[in-house]
Length: 208
Image (tube, rainbow, N blue to C red):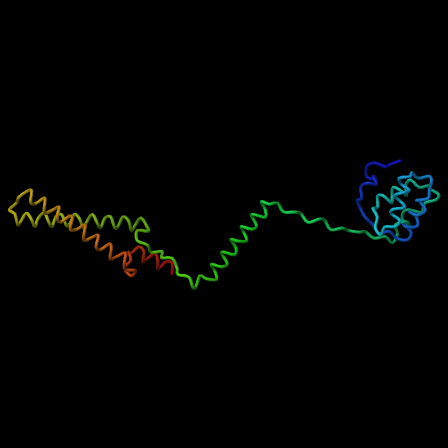
């Protein structure tokens, strides 16, 4: 009769080494006609193995005649447990792709650390890189153009005897001249690396 539950012989469970006492019992059980044919074949198979499941041996022992079987403690005396390493868990494709990207990122970061002393540094002092620079430049342009308009207006007023048309033309001419002057100064300021805005200079000192 086949045992169910924890004594199911089809479940390997704990594995032990087959000692001479266990082998002798299994050989005798393979010829025991009180056992089912299935258990006799199982006993014969296990008798030639180096290791065997504990549950299968115990199932054969329990079905054997009480007066012909050895004691359970003496049967397993001298046997050792056999531990098998679990199969390595296979990584999913998503995990492999993520690990590959992390590896590439780490290698790129390591490369940047190696070449940081020989590669040119990025210029952090670009013109108008902050709102302060933009507002300051805009205010400066407006002030220059307004000053040029006033200078042209009053200069033409003195030259052309208070003519409103000529006065306005002089103011517009002065405004254009101020805009051209500011454009020229802007070209010089951006082309010369040593000429930096005050905010850029203070920011550079903080970084140092």
